Length: 521
Ligand code: AMP
Ligand code: MG
Image 1 (cartoon, rainbow, N blue to C red):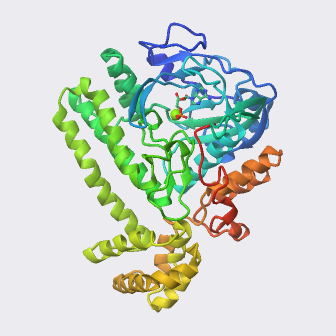
Image 2 (cartoon, rainbow, N blue to C red):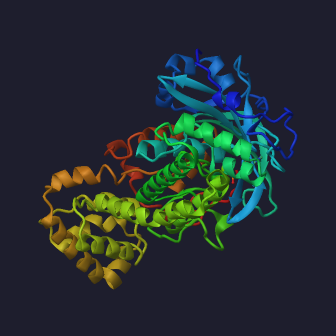
Image 3 (cartoon, protein in one colour):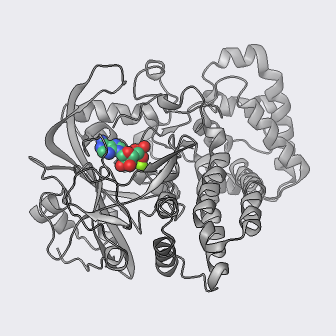
């Protein structure tokens, strides 16, 4: 394998003086050198071929022993020195101090076609930042990260990606429900990629240590390599940087709301500085449209990270980043302005996105009202978000309201209840909707085409990932493959996968992993 290695992160930023993996507080360093633990018997379960090729790894090379051993952490590529990144963060609204890569180890950075990529193993053993953890990952959470990051990418949502999924051949002890019943599970390793894995928390760490020199070094580094469009200097430069991060973060959240993705753990250590989705833990997909839903059982009481709260949390997290960058700017007003503009800009973007989901070309008071009423209607009874929006594109300008309703009727979990109690409300909404369509220039078929580009037909429903996990536990990886293939083209009609365009089955409603998940991974 000929990779064009260029380790700019470790070349340009300060290293921890120690290079053991002993748990410790680290100061004055952006990372610590640490070697991955050697997996007992690594086995390649799945590889994202299209990603591999885009980073300069050929289909032949994927099959090689070198690929298996390097990307599972068993051997270290020559002239490279793996490391764990240091960062801090706010978890569930509270300052948590130093966190860092407790079970992620970056192998190296490589350049292909002028694009630089970091290759990072998740589940490769202890680092100085592992605290009481073992640094390992289990198969179920690794399948979830591998499939979902690729699914998100193909949905057009900014995200880290997943190159390959391996079982390690080691067994890992986990107490899934945190109820005193630990059990051994299959260990696994994911090799994920991104232009960088720098988080809000990397800046918070230096700020909390009052290490302004390194805070500035890290910020200058990030701007130089990833925000080259910024050409102002001094305080202006850092302000522009913050504003760009706020913009990118907002764009990411609009995408999450568009496809019904709930991150589940939006702590500041899980917020990428690039506005890409990072750290797939107890995430989930909305089945019924419920803004109060969170997949994370750890967050059940306050539901801080519920679907409808994601924009507000993004703003709160940006406030923490603003605090961290403050020593470089020393003026609160312009930072406050960017933060106060965030919800205003978000609202405008959200409305525009919802217009596209409904197939409206132009915005008016009426169209906005139709969107508001729809948001209310979708919550009257359980209504499947994905099926509703996908089916809505079938509605025609010449449909009667009753006909239009029949076209989306499969999205209701309890159709009888709808017909008994809220049918008139829906009839009223469809009257408004069809009237609005009549005012539009687009033909029915043109509208259907554009709506289908923003309303996915297939998403990685929680129970689907769980079925793939249950089979994989018995060493049957067919479903991992099938879901991966299907999710490469989430906006396309794919006849062979029609069975996955379906509401969550009843058995999955309360099954562990299918609806609610703990942080155990
Ligand atoms: P998360 O909530 O998954 O983003 O993790 C929060 C922090 O805990 C990060 O610093 C992780 O690296 C660390 N962590 C999570 N799981 C483990 C584990 N099994 N071993 C070591 N560190 C972990
Ligand atoms: Mg994390």
